[in-house]
Length: 500
Image (tube, rainbow, N blue to C red; front, top):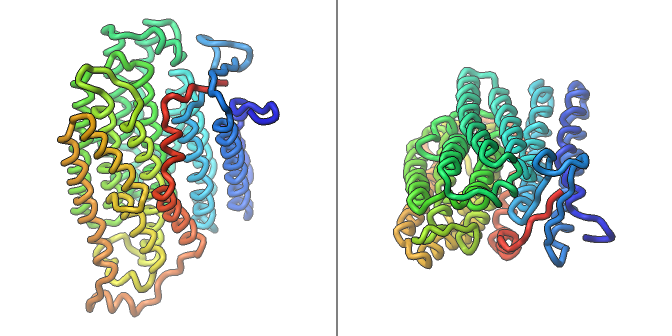
């Protein structure tokens, strides 16, 4: 607390500011300054998020501080909750929203799609922020719906047949996942008479209703996360969406459901989980790594390759579940496993959003998303190819990137926990990532008769701001590799929750 200012008092601002931005962007949809106004809102949100983060970590003692909105306490009231993990996700959302909003302002400049894009964009950001600070199971459901509906609408912005089909599939899968989650919270409310997560965690145990609720929550959220074999909706949705939408879907939207799953698995219903269930999630994650990498290698479209790479990279995070549970069945979101998972979430968000932006710029320059058409593009788009390479280094797990630290933590955790078999999956996934990413880089530096003819044509203009924003994300990914201590400290589970 600084000069009597509590970080918790800023949480409503973080949630409602994007809603205000969305309303104003709808009212000024025909203004020529629409892009600038939305960038200003993104800057304001980033400042509020930064101040909240600074205030939170400036406190000497992270004591629980609950504020009852409208003077109604749980179980009837609504509480906003923030801890180390959630404040990290809020800060990550604020940073990526700022950079991607700047990119989007240039990307949609002069495009009539911007009239629909900005209100949906801010609605999705509000849903993300609301989810990360929700202390109530039903409010989480509402935020999941807001995120899913707005994301599906954003995928459909391209208005092509493929985009509309991908959007409809995304919408239906999201609704099915939400239905599973809703059935689970009905069971929890019937059992405990409250939807407050803290109160449920204090009363929950290893009963049959708790186990059924945990199964339903896991199935519903794994559908939204697109964990193998429930990944079928993700590649077409991410590949057919506008470039900034593809970036935020991969960086943040799938992570929102993952955040909720981690919260229920390790905190709210932790006693209802088993060692066998954690191993199953690990097997699905390991399979996702291998299968997603193989499909990325076989892809003929650049954005499809990156989308399948997301399927593979999400598999690494699911190794958190078996690595956080010992043979006796005790599971806690603590230690090096949680640090590896949290760091991986941040590293992947920055690297994958940078890769999607650079890929979008390459496609804009080339006029095609065909991988075969990328031959010789290094001479025409060197900076965007550099961004793609830096992001690729992180996804592979090479030093000095953030991805290297995340995978190193996973490897050491697997060895220390005695579950050495996961090391083979992690190493194999890194090698496969190198194969499909170096395939792109190899083509980019290759010149033949066909590419010579392409090079004779003037390349399409790519605005500098599109390249600069992509480069900023790539440099952030590298910077995270040089200074990991801050994020590792944030993931320390000993930090108590601060609630509003």
